[in-house]
Length: 150
Image (cartoon, rainbow, N blue to C red):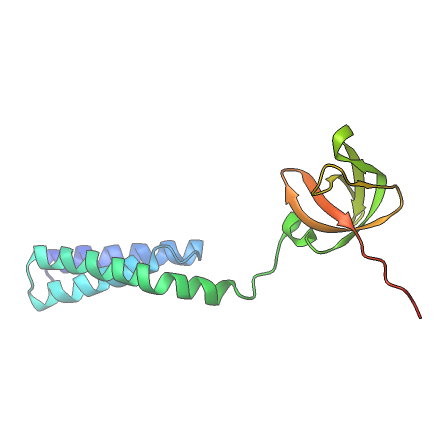
């Protein structure tokens, strides 16, 4: 077997193993490029053609298909840790007052420092708030809209 065929085949195997271990859609495109280069080497194409094919195929696959694949694979991704708090409600444990750098809330049994999106807003203790986002280690919250029961 030709040396170039072996090199491309070994590169293909290494890249597939890396992809299997990371599952991050990072090396699969280059693995396919190395497989194409391996087939070209097996067919007798020169090394410059093999290298150019490897680069062109890898880059085209990466640029064209990666965004589509990432969207497909990430559509059911469950939010983890802190980002899963956005949209949830919390109980104000200490009045939230940005101007005095004060405010704490409890969500999922944990205490968080909390701030409002606007400095002039204050939210009293024992009110229910909705989490809008996270900035560093502080939750950004707003007073939950009260709904009347008929």
